[in-house]
Length: 396
Image (cartoon, rainbow, N blue to C red):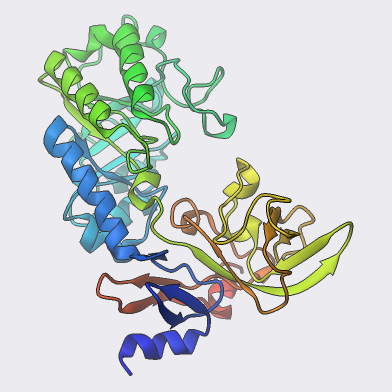
């Protein structure tokens, strides 16, 4: 028995991969999906991004806010130019990749700016006030401004940076008559899991409102939300859009910061049914929590896909799925199954690598999912298990 099998036996849950049954613990984030190893799918996503870079002339960096699994940095850095951070701590993590570090935050304290001066290559400010307050201490960094193109593409208000009244970014009217000497770039982020045509419309909005300043800049960062690894995304159109823009502005270094797209469809969350209750229908209590382990389910909200499950009434048995916290609204949704669920059954929530690990909490002390990678050669690597000491360490 090899080391991978010993680890998998230790953590006791079942996951099938290409006809082979692997033992692993319930509640484990595992790099496997269907018949494709997770590491292989991550690499496939990164290879597509490398092609976009090579053919468009744009550069791509990882947005840590969406996917911060540093145990994958050795893979990611072979394809991308670095990472972007939204805080000092994220910048420190990005530095561990050993490539470029970019940063943006709505506001920096004095000590933040001092620390970031030794960590980052690019930094964008959210306001002219912030730029004037910190530009001297960041003299060795390529500085930029976050702009608001006043152009909306995101469908979810929670994730719409260009909504009216947004606190994020500077409008073109605020830059009129301002001496921007020392500003080398603009940063724009207004997308959320969008297609290439949204990118094209955003570039049009930037040119319309901010075109007069583009000639004096060195770079334009288009932020994240470019879901180029999603099935059906028009990659060729994205490449053409970026190439055409760079042809108009050949002096600009164009940068994209995807987060979700890097980890898109690269791994599920495995959970176990702990109990079944009944109240106007069957309800399964799981050993995970929506609010603690996949909060976007409640915040956006959205309905995650479960392997083998259907929409209500699509299959024979409807079951509402709830988390194991005391929050009344810790409910994922109602799904249908071919057979009744029972305690001990395991469910596989698909596409759970992005905006999950980075947003989890220890609310109620609900046991935290372990994290692992299924390597391309079939070996399973347990990256992290969480204990009571991790929960206690978050408290005081």
